[in-house]
Image (cartoon, rainbow, N blue to C red; front, side):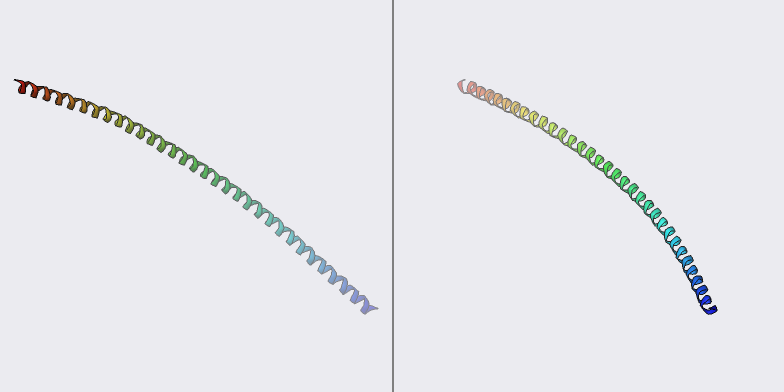
Length: 118
């Protein structure tokens, strides 16, 4: 009976040690899970922050691109308008030159007629 009691005591002692070991492992796993959750939350927050910053930068860039495009389109429209004005002025000047040449030609012809008649 003493050996049986000794075996029972040893069994109880071993079970208590295993229970303590399991308790420590369980606590370690719990702390590890908490750290993992903390790290996950921090990384998700950092990712969200970076995504927001990226969206902000991309939005600003798109706005800058749109402003630049609007500026360039405005300048192109102004140049087209100036070209049209220049074109109209040249047409008018060409017409004045043609009229002046016609007047000069008529005056020459009149002068030649007077000289020939006389």
